[in-house]
Amino acid sequence: MSKSSIPQRIQSAVWARAGGRCEYRGCNVDLVGDLIAGKDDGLFGFIAHIVADSVKGPRGDERRSPELAADLRNLMLLCHRHHKLVDVDEVASHPEEVLLAMKEEHETRIATNTGISAEYASHVLRFGATIGPNEALLSTQAIFAAMPPQRHPATRQTIDLELLNQVFRDEEPEYWAIQKRNLDQLFREKVQGRIERQEIKHLSVFALAPQPLLIELGRLIYDIVPTTVHQRHREPETWNWQRDRPPLEFVVSRPPENASRPIALKIAISGVVNDDRIVAILGNDAAIWSITIADPGNDVVRRPEDLSAFRRTLRTVYGELQARYGESTLLHLFPAMPASLAVETGRVWMPKVNLAMKIYDHVRNVGFVPTFTIGVPKGTVA
Image 1 (cartoon, one colour):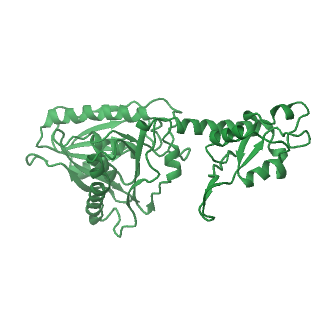
Image 2 (cartoon, rainbow, N blue to C red; image 1 turned 90 degrees about the horizontal axis):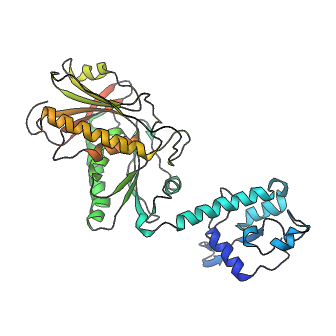
Image 3 (cartoon, one colour; image 1 turned 90 degrees about the vertical axis):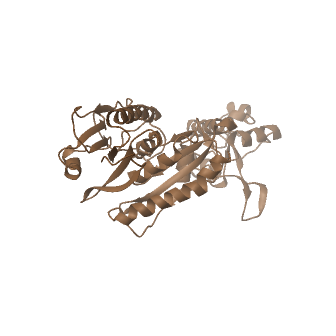
């Protein structure tokens, strides 16, 4: 424990640099105020010396201890538990370099988060729905951690559009009508009005749900407010962008000019979609368009630039479809893609310009099933 007195201005600087939180790696507990004790202004942290202020103290040094006793670079804020751990119980496991690294990591994160301008504030929209028999869960802590340095949460409260625990499952026709209606209503109630009143100026979207519903969410967002869509990664399990692979390059395949109808677009990014699965539904005369990548997989979107490239590609394809077939044609969409790209598929679609789309979903042991249609064809051509 400390043998010397630390000037008040240095103590204040330690608390400020730490953001009032424990600097021990992985802790980050708030050390200001206690709701149970009813002390909003109470300080419950300890300022610990990395190199002890006494030669006989933890990590003490005959020359450096007196020199660093009141040095801001040698002081870190800890909770009671971790203060005791590094100075009493596990001194040997916490050498100087380990504690310095913890201090640097924590204070860099605090400086980054608090240094973001108010104009970069973003409202967090979470959307989770039943995926087959499994429930999609979105951790608020993980979501907030994925936003800096480009954005920061405008408020601690997320906007939740959670359609969980429905009686119907995705192989049942009623499921899609109910889920779409509920999503549309929730969006109107929780998002659209606040955007119109300019309470929301930017959205950060974190969504895990069946692909047709993700596309519908994107359609609702459209371009009514600037939006950043995030991707949940499987390896590692995080929302943070990884940038550990080259940017995705999307490949478009088009049917012959004289191909018949119906018109299908398969987006095969997270897996291969064989044409025979589409032919089994639409018939042998189907004209099948395709957007894919060289090596499809379910964890391929690793950087925000992948979303930008996908939007550019999809806009081009939507435009070509409109030009070739006309506005009276219904487009049959067969999606197999990461969640973020599904949201972008809906955002890119323009109701007054692009073809109406009947969206299909893959159901295990069943295959593709029709879900719902967005837009209305101006005619009767299928």
